[in-house]
Length: 218
Image (cartoon, rainbow, N blue to C red; front, side):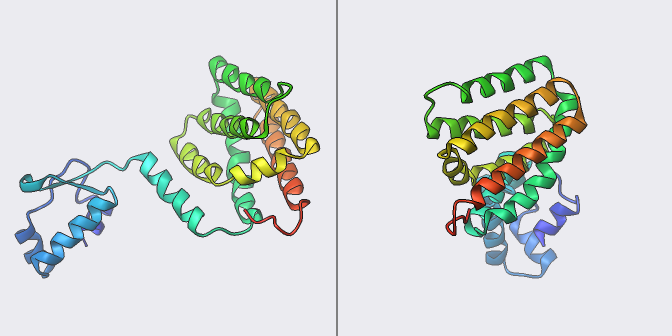
């Protein structure tokens, strides 16, 4: 009920909630029920309790929203193929957006990551970290916080997939090659080429993961 008022815009970030007595009268519930509801909302980061001065509505923090999505994915683990379907739609499109919005500095950061991943002797754990950062960089280059939030949450749960695939020399070489192709498409400012390069990369990731046997659950 309190949350509905926040969702409907009746209470905006920074607004102070009515006191417990007024809320209890308005909602026709007891004050302990109101107190418990406010405590629950505070735990979710929706309101901030300030002792005797009352509670205020907080602005939704993108990091908190991303954390919630990641926790959901972690507690509802399924096959990687299910996550891949989402990545295929969102991340492929994001690559095209990045190609139109990236700056020279953005491209330089991405190029450094591609170079790092291609260094001789890099170990699997470091390569997986660089791989993750590369995909985060693509999301950042969209300059759209929603892309960044969703894709960062998805990628946090894929470290197992990355490390598993990168132990294969063929998959490792393909990752370096396909990252380079994505980089060049974004550098050229071609949304069509960037989407095609990302789609090909994600397809290869899925093929290598599924080829590793029956344990291929993300």
